Image 1 (cartoon, rainbow, N blue to C red):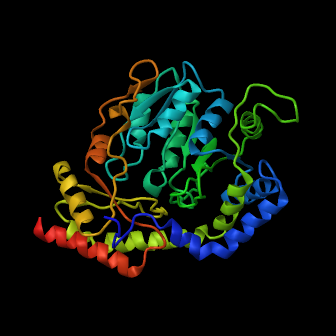
Image 2: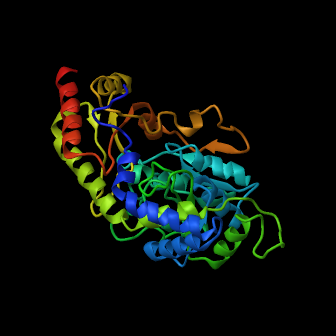
Image 3: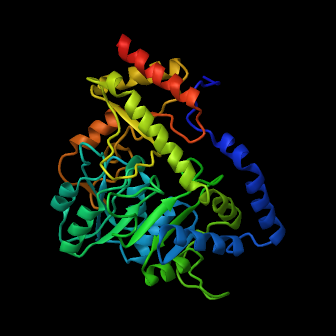
Length: 378
């Protein structure tokens, strides 16, 4: 359907809303003649670390690079196991394999759909070196529980925050209880540029020093190189993100407003067949994705088709769990720790309704009416 009544992405609308500021920022970069590791990147990194409350912020090429560069900076690689959840985007585990480590997948919590701390505890072996919790769909993980487990076993904690920037827990903020936070700025993220970009936040100077060297061909000085890669956040993207970072609070507030409205107005219609997002008390769920689940997995495709037929551009996140992907390297590079009933149920039954700040109240009303109409006729 070409003309959706309720579109999933509204990147063009956001661009139009911010057009004068974005064009001025881009023009400044063009006129500077400095497009790679220039002043716009330096300025954005300063703004990022101030925003996150971290000692350091390092811009890199994308969110996947942010993960594996952090793993390498920590010395994680061959023979090391890293624990993450099975119901997330493939890149989290992929970054572990790029670094040479073994990805260990565990189940998610039945309510939050974030990583289950008890499953993490049970998965630890003498090869475990790190826990990589994913703040799924925009909801921050119970980092207090993760930190407690990590401290008991002497493990690193690296937060995959590609989906939850501007979120927080009930009594803690992101990055406060980990060694590093990795995020993505690809277009569809809550803070996104017009292409690929990512960043790492940390309070460890050795991580900052090592990643800055790794991202730039192993170089911290002109013509002097060691082993490294090419993963730099370009100044043009940095300038765009500087503009958007100033708006992130308001943009997130609008997401929260829409998410809370959907939860409230769909509550009755969802009873008996549809699971709505769960938000723990005191947490700021930033609703990168508004994911519902059909209680009967066989109904998911019927519901999704009905939404499409009625003009709602719904999608799925993520309909194939990592261990079920064709690219999952069973054996020495990956293992599943225990059964994964919650992760598999999440994958089999998920439907993502449109939720972006630029949706109008009328569009949200249309979507609510379509879901209610389906509930009545099912």
